[in-house]
Length: 121
Image (cartoon, rainbow, N blue to C red; front, side):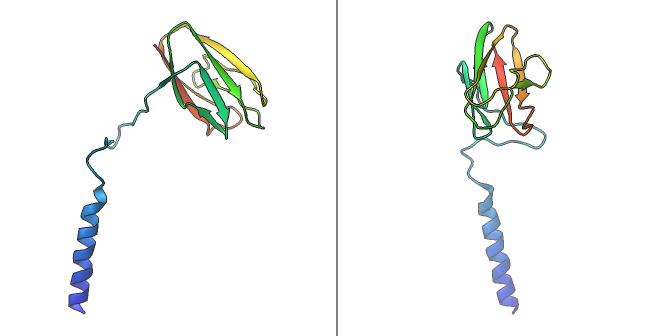
């Protein structure tokens, strides 16, 4: 019985050693946030209850257009209230011009789990 327990313990230790993943990717330490590179585009598509791309970059003075392809209405509403597309029904589009540099988080008022960001350079 002791031999079986010892084998299980050694096998568990070996298995745990291999669970750290590879060192080729980036790591995130506790308390830090990982960031996704913003995609340069002037269009955000809303489909499957997601904003795509989730992170977009535009130049100051550029116009960004949201188009809703879902059956449900959506909005793109800034966390800081700096912009709001208003209600977008299926097929509707709304464009907003971003003049001030910064990073703006936004969400859908109907579906608050839908979140994204605009980076204005």
